[in-house]
Length: 157
Image (cartoon, rainbow, N blue to C red; front, top):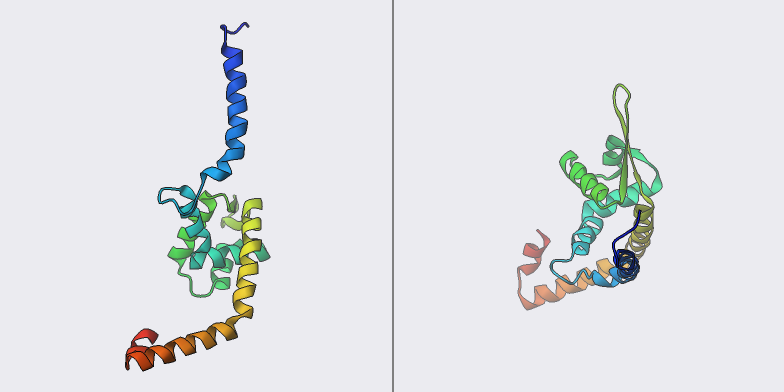
């Protein structure tokens, strides 16, 4: 089948533009821009439950209740919302097996595994430096108490 004049040139140009756009796509996203979708994903990854869920799944695939026990303190509703958001972002894969009762496991996608690896490095840094963090908090609270007596008790709530 023959193409109308100029169509193959237009298709070739579109392919070239697509390749350039794919390379430039990374530069097109900025979490500092209000409307950028990367900001929402960053929130899913770095929020308390997202970070803990990704980190827990870095260890192994887990069923919902196993994951809920591993991420101490998360409610069923919050874990469900977190998993949906992470699955939508392509970070978590849901494997539902048609058994009775249903068997559903969650695991990291390759993107999720890369993200979790970086989160785990941050978690290790934070946990390893907690004595410094606690000392800084104490110094801060003591300084605030000297500036305005009674604030320390209010800040601790």
